[in-house]
Length: 223
Image 1 (cartoon, helix red, strand yellow):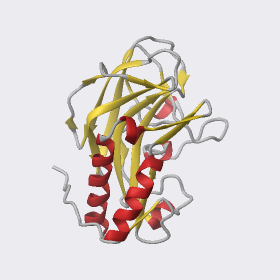
Image 2: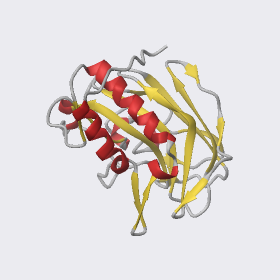
Image 3: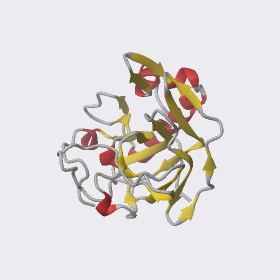
Image 4: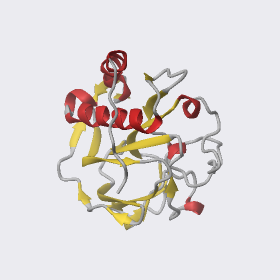
């Protein structure tokens, strides 16, 4: 089992957390803003736990979104979960997954050639996997499952779907904390088979990482 020991945040660190928690999960869509910590109050509790785990793991002060030292946080990006540093043909870093029939591996990839490979969490990073965001006009997936260190989490069926400004947010029953050097894989169950790559399904979570990692311009440094 992963070590989820929590550290103690000082008054200054709690102030940063309280000021930024509403920003870290704010979605902007069609000129509207949605603060998911208001719609889902439990997300605040989950993120506070994650920051406390980061304090214990990294042993340095929490400095928030603009961390110049210590550690901070930001939204999970495609480059945080890609098993190899591959770019799309257009050179963009983006979410890509092949929309096939039934269960498909989804590794935050930039090309179908690497699908099925497990992901490795950077050694200076903790990922809080909260679920998925769908930008499609109609639902793409009905279920998902994560495998961490060869242990399968229960399959989750997204029956409790809340549409926010036309954005369906599929949240895990509880967040999945991915610790440094964890090997993991994500699977999603598509409702239809188009056989094409889609950018409309995004993995959703928060990255807790050292300031050095947050300032590193290399998307996914060699392990």
